[in-house]
Image (cartoon, rainbow, N blue to C red):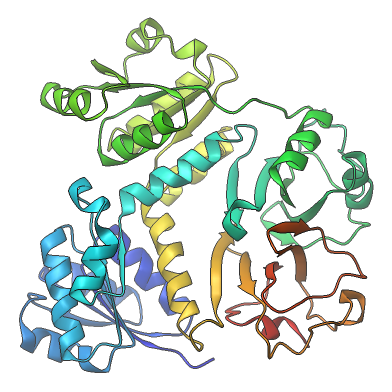
Length: 453
């Protein structure tokens, strides 16, 4: 697959994470920022081209060769700047333009805003991060939970405990224990990632990704002592934009939400915007405050103060109080790795959430419209779960999977046909318009037929 020419404006966390990911996929990347030091740093660290200047100035965008760009990404901290630069880039000839928009007042009108201005995609990092956390809280036993095929199938990550009934059990026997309605898609062990066959034996501390419908996943979790009800009460420390969006989503789900925020003015804003939530003006990193506000009796605790170190420390403290689900928001990779080693598996990094989203967008647009990727999620940097829609020209239509010659490190984990989930077997064959979930260690898969030998 030929690499694309991509221009990224704004070299903050999101812009840098996106540039790094796209370079790994062999694309031609140019970055633009007004800050000389930021541009110089990323150019010296990686193989990107750098342009220093204002992204609303045509000569600057011309220097970045926006007119030749397959995709233009506006990722500065300013919504209006992103929208205007995206519109300008489109007029200069960029094929597709994407803009970061964060303000809640735009959220309800994103589609009309996008269509009216000719912007191909608008993304809200805080809102997307909130949705990611919400998905985890639907199944608190999980480390992570990703939804595919419009929610018909989930890919959910667990850790095998020392006392788990499926420890030292083969993948085939473990699936049978739960009625055979799921597939063990990926196993991560000691830094290595495996796409297991039925004879693969599970060990304590393995991280496993299971593909199944939610109802079957619940049944499995009961049988292997992982069952926890969906979170019904959540305490959030930090009242930033992610907290606002998350609280709004959880309240709509009927979840009780308490937000602890230290800034009095922000507390008033949240209290007015989220009338059904309880907003407490206090320092949520203080142990006594957390105890007074009943964190022990909550089902889940989310730390998003805006400071990685505070989020890490307060999350470790809360995890010592009981068996509630704890999710810290941490942007630093070394700190996130350290926190995971200390037992907090569910760590959220907004810039990585958005980088995943935008890499999926690029991959989907590397092929003809309608033939690309519906959804894409990274699994521990060494495997990917990808959702495709089967097109009429796919050469494997009507052929039983046992007769298809798949590449190594490829597993078909689920098929959704006419709204119904099918757990694939050797006799299963694919039909046009099926949604197919593929887990693969093969790099840069952009079309379904690339999984065939």
